Amino acid sequence: MTNSTRTIGGKVHYLPRIGLIRNSTLYVILEDVSRADVPAKKLASQIIPNAEVAGLSFNLEYDDVDVIPGHSYAISAHIKTDDRLIFTTTERHSVELGVDYLQPLEILVHLV
Image (cartoon, rainbow, N blue to C red):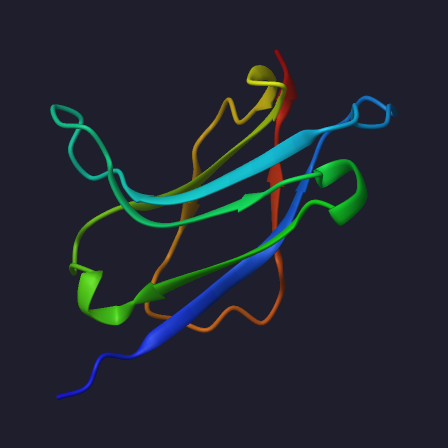
C-alpha cells in the first residue's frame, strides 16, 4: 500500500488595514487537536519568511496515513516580526482531512 499525500491550502488574513512590517514571517500549522490532555500532534507546517512581500497564502501537505478516523484537526497561524508575535489565531479553524478542498481556506488572525 502506498501513502497518499494531500494538500490543504488557503490564505491567512487579518482585519486591520495595515501593511506587515519588514522581515515578517508567517507560520501555518496543521495539527491533530483531538486530546485536550496532551500537546497537539503536528501533521504539517509551513514557514513563509518575508511574508510582507511573499504574501499570506499557504499550502500544507500531509499524508493520509496520519489521518485517524474520529480525530479532530485544525489549522493555526501566526505572524512574527523579529521573533515578536504580531498576529495569531484566536479561535479553532477546524478542517476535515482526507478530502479534497475545492475552495481555499480562509484563516483569520488577530492583532496581539
